[in-house]
Length: 295
Image (cartoon, rainbow, N blue to C red; front, side):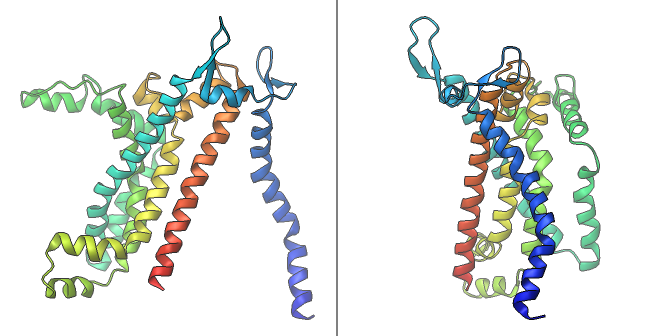
């Protein structure tokens, strides 16, 4: 059997699995896309005719008296809050994750496995349980306010605020930032730092001009691993935001539940998918640029 025949045979054998993969991954997305162009059902679900009303509702709202259009401020506020908290979560996890990853990568090799093991312990517990644990710490009678009371400060009313959601998401997604940066720092050649110090660079200059550019692939990978799930987070904003500080994930769930406006929920889900796709495209482009620069 020649190479061409072997290649054709391998594709033939893989065809059923590839077909199943395409149906399982793209099929549900197509259903959601079609739903976004349908009309809400009488009680729930969707029905014909096809319309772009749901997409209009994403950005605009129609006055019930004079039928005039205006910006859907509530929707835009939820979008802005989702993007803002996702970016802040990424920044906070980076600031906390960089020294953590550096600490682990600079331990004796036989001890690094123990520190990595400790980092992954939160993943052993359900996300809801971890979020409720944060709730118990920051609530009015929680551990944080008890400690502040002992030192004569506080109390702080953090629960059901954007700050509470930010604290919860930073805690939940911190390991996803630490692990890729650890992998990048572990391959870092420390002789580059010695060369920087020989050229009279101080610590901050060595960090900015030597360390960060070299470990940039790890930073980008960690940032995308934190930003993408943060943008669609549901459990943490629901528990720590109390339903008052909704993010886009909660808003989509509301449309498929109490709102019974499935087309609007589907349009929002497609919009979230597009936002995540753009973030991934930027990541690939920046990382590709990194590869070309390194090459």
